Image 1 (cartoon, one colour):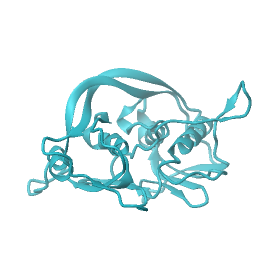
Image 2 (cartoon, rainbow, N blue to C red):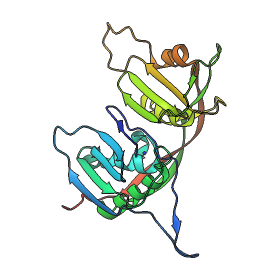
Image 3 (cartoon, rainbow, N blue to C red):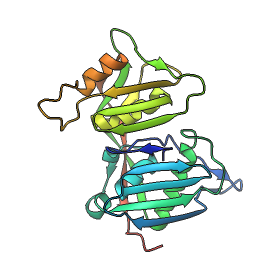
Length: 252
């Protein structure tokens, strides 16, 4: 899901909320594509990152095909099926130019999502299909004591970052926070707080690999103590993206 100035250490920030097209004729809409793009194997010390720089330069580094597909279709990486072997182990760097002026992140997600889909289809010969499964999901709701969220200040720039034990976001709607919380909880999370607007917050919690001396709370406790929110388990439809075909990209 592409992001602006968002460095990832754990999981994939899910930012793509859909796709759009530019209609060239009444009969055949044409998918958006990057103006130019390269896909190359990552170096061993490259860090996982997505970034949209000024001037329309898009960069994704140290990404597996599975994570690129997840970003392009706006789902967490664990909702990409058929990503065995090299599709989930070999890492690639993508550098591209949009060729057109895009709005600031996160409003640019729709266009970037479609451009990335076109790139994966072209360079990886990617073929996928959606598959809906009934799974346990989480509903993000307001906790008993009430919300503790702080509204973003006027003029505050949107940002989102995740790393083990910490989630930081600024000037984003709870819909986006809930979608990315799925990377920590391993299940689909839907915002059902009813809270409109954009918010800024930091959530500190003990990751799964925390040691016995780590006194940070669990993610569930942190959500309630720090944000005044909780997640309720439910059953619901979850869309997976299934990879039917993919080939390693040639040199470019």
